[in-house]
Image (cartoon, rainbow over all chains, first blue to last red; front, side):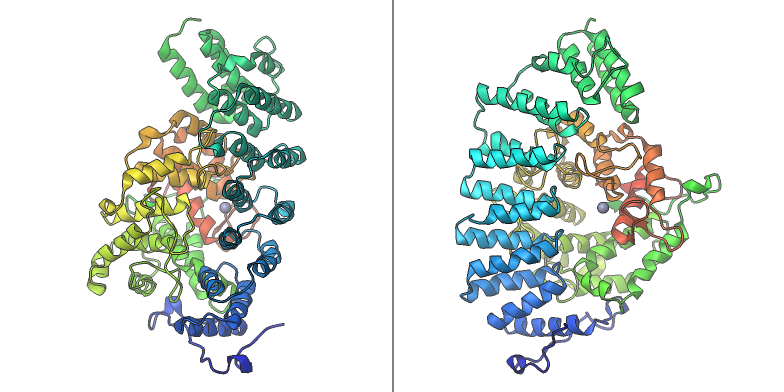
Length: 308
Length: 322
Ligand SMILES: [Zn+2]
């Protein structure tokens, strides 16, 4: 049901301000629908008076429900929250359904972050995130927010890792979940080294995922990232790769990514002819859409003049 | 994104029907966008008004119809979004934010209207430059979007882009900004919104764009990033923005312009991508959608056209990848 302010006694002291469109300008001429237009008029009026009150919170709530992308309203609401002594927990309780209604909106996340930061506790956030990811398991804002929580409250623990694993298990192609795993194990730890055991565990973890879906880009990137981070040679995973791509069996290749790494291994081993053959398979048969890229790699190899 | 040359060559007689670009329809579509003020949708997207104007204007330049929107009125509208502090809001009465400030500057640059700015607003350029410069965090080098403080590599790129259009880059610490961009590089060779955030083609564009403006592409692992970017092409020719996501016309721009800045545009299959973009046109009402069959909008229209321009589609003006 639409809500209006002009006959609401709680607002009788406020004269709404019509939109100033910068003069007689057809590009900005105005024809709002009544409800939105009226609410905005009252918002302009309270903003002109710097009013921060309960009713301002309810007005901004109303406008956000109609148009959550209006960033000025969020900004003003955030200030009103600071100036009134509204319960921050109530604000979060209101934000939950609002975020669920507007999955693509990003102002909500910044707003939430500011409030949780002030509350000083991540309690309940994991459940809410689970609900959000239930709607869209790759929502960029939600994953960024999760990273912020981990960092802000130092939650680099086994529970967080187990949760990330459950997300990958649910969908092994969820690149956001893979990125979160990297953040927990390597990236978020501020350049701290990763122990040999953990490197081994991560290599195995990526390999298990690859076996489930050999053409899935995410675990391959992850595997490569770990090997590179640990400064290991690519040949560390040679036998694993040969199960997916082997020059002896050029018709039974299960993953173009395996071929890609196999080329790296042959380059490492100074086997230029074999590397060329692998790159040919990619350019001509297994990834022809990127033929120019694979031919570029061949060109690099020719320049180096490694012996085959 | 800005334009490097005037209207294109025209003449599309040799192009088969399924590869047609409906230039006139697109021009009319963009002109019509501003006549829909009786629809609520128009007002609910008010927070995109200035960006939308920039997208529409750029699309018209690409299509070789730069005068299809009235220049004086656009300048009037843009300046009505300018606040006393030097920042632009999305529309009159909206708070200043870096994203709109960048669009405002880009529109003025496209229209060659910096002189008019100075005539109407004393020291206009300097004020805008200072507004942007004040949003830089002196410690990390990154930029906030507004006084609210949210940070995103989009803001950093926008800041450098707008400042360089006004020849005011010296107002900020470019080296610090470059350092921050590099801290957003990920293990897969690409970039995210913040350090640690997932790689995303849109964010790659902003980071590579910022490094290009700063003259520091030497910091990028170009082969690795190029490989990640070319991996974005799917069998149907379209490009996605992250691994295992759907194709979308707007990524034609983010991915291709990044590849162009790295001189690796040929690493994707241009023919397949061209035909994917063309399938996203509405041949009746004009405009492009994110993928075939969806609703068109001005955002996907301009990025589709800019993509086609990078692919050297005949008749389109040339676009600068930065
Ligand atoms: Zn899109």
